[in-house]
Image 1 (cartoon, rainbow, N blue to C red):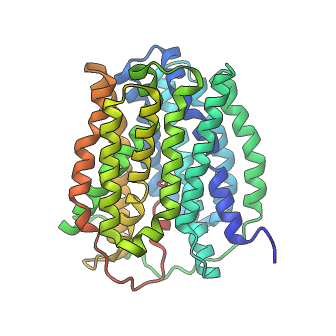
Image 2: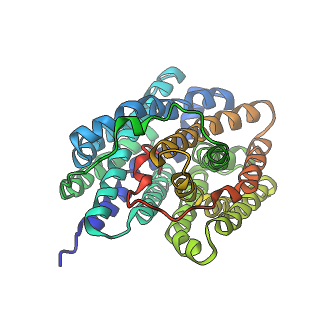
Length: 395
């Protein structure tokens, strides 16, 4: 039996893909300072990433379907590795926005390829790997953020450090991607079934509002955790990137254990347990008197939001008001809006108040998500299709 089975190769490429971008996250404060940006200015510049993702979504799906996920991963990894290195080179806020748009576009493309490839491997082998693959993705972005923090501690500038990480990871990723099996997908669904331009049902809206708070928190952690540690608690050097590293580690841990929790307690109870943890973590972060306690808060938030998105996907797919693919497509759009809205809200509040109050803005949205956990009741699935693979750009 080969050690590098299709399942393991898929998990490995999920792990390698986000490392370069993860190394960017701890360097955001450095770039902010170099460009002389306040919190509001930085928030506007950071909108480039989700804007690029949203603009690419209508085109990425048909393109990946035409060329196949393996080719999409191979081509996408090259484009993504280049694009992920550009934000650290931006000479002004406008170019920072533009380079992040490029990064978001390439990220959407390559992540869609990853999701589709994992789905095809599941169908062809009968092994369930999607949630575990997402767990490896979380480990990858955590490793990337740790590398970014370590290189910052060594006083290596971001403009050199991030391309260095990308150059090291890219050959490994291409080698793994080249070993992925070519699997032809059988897609009986028509274009009419894929239409999402119908007002969603109240049940779907409840699930969408639930996931909005989850992804808004994830976006805020990615863009503002390092700045929170620097501005609110005076952390310096490599320490500023540890917040996101701890957060990503706990997201991965929650995803690896999420299926067991769901089997034992059910989707709603699991969501309530995790939602309560996310709220507690956000409150702890607001009152944290030092970096150590803040890191505990980041970890609790990560564990709390870890399973929210997969549970929402399953719930949306189980609704019977129309096709599952249409419901999941709307959920994916709202999830991306959470990433789009979260960072600028944090930035504008920080501009006019302080970082602690800005982070506290997560409490009410997480409270809404907790109140809507009852919407995650799912019907018994009637299709073998893995609908998480329908969602590009969200892992």
